Image (tube, helix red, strand yellow):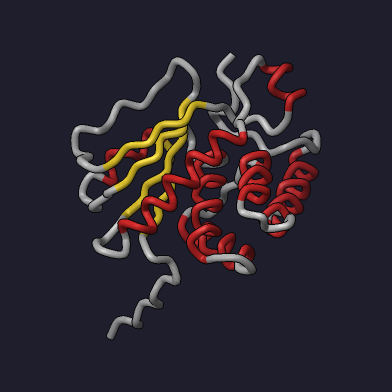
Length: 196
């Protein structure tokens, strides 16, 4: 006998992936899609997808210095505000029908997990930020959500730093891994971090 599946505390299903993984979701009844793209690299709506497609354009940098150094487009508070509004739309729709939200960026390791984390925090409500992080890691392990996106979401949702604090264990793991590899202790880098 199979063990019973624990019901999700979320009102809708959330998935996270990189761009190359999009085709494997063709049969998974995705109703809402968020594409986080690099400039000049927009994701075309997949032929199999018939739902609502939201696009955002920013790169995986976490401060103005990095953006200048890499000539990159950083996430802006307006981007995060718009993506949270899309999350609210998913919540509203889930009251009358099944919703499956798929969030992707180029590698599925930093920007899309940050946006998914923000939307999970929105859906769970205040005070459940650590639970939201555990849920994200159960959906997509081995990620390091973009800290600037998380900070903006924390401010917009008035979480008083709790979303940023939920990143701390991942930060500590990253620093430890960087030590082991002899890498400098900077922010985690995603494969699509910057397109020079």
